[in-house]
Length: 288
Image 1 (cartoon, rainbow, N blue to C red):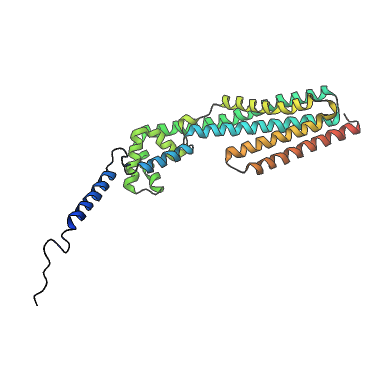
Image 2: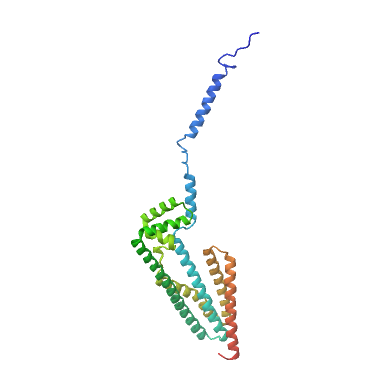
């Protein structure tokens, strides 16, 4: 018996043209989908870059944002000091006497004295910090002018300590030095920025204004209502305001708002209760 031979056209020569045409249509459709000009393919890395941009926009990474948060935090703390200090004074005097004159005099004195004290303290503190920063900046500028190679080696060593290889650390140090040598050294060595030096006068005025705004609340709460409800109304207004300032301060710092509010309210309530008790005792004994 002779072995069966298969024709070169295949087992089913009548089906091959149809299969070939179907395969060509499928390949052409896939080719057109992958090269459709109406839906261009996204370049490699674009999606990652967009995610990075969204991340950078959602978090503050610049010095201006950090400075605004610091100023806002300082303002909240100053207002909180004004509320507690003046409220304790006027409530204490109200515990000793119901006359409006002494309460007004004591509250006004506490407001002015507290605002001046806050401004003076802030001015002295910020002036000392500013003078220290300016001295460090001038020292770094002089060293860069007199010993540029030694400063470049120092900057290279700083980046090597941060984990960079010697070659990469040297390249980074050279590039940053060529761009802005003073800024590079101030950032790497001292963690300061030449443009971040705060004005002592601005800090003093901001502190005094914040204290005054906070102190105005207990003054109005103790003076405007009728005599019979002025003390409990002042207690309530002050505690609500302290809860708000505590929550805002915690929100700025990223902490627990409820926990911060409870701490501030408890502290303020203890201060008011203490001064009112002392004033009531002095008034009852006839000392004042």
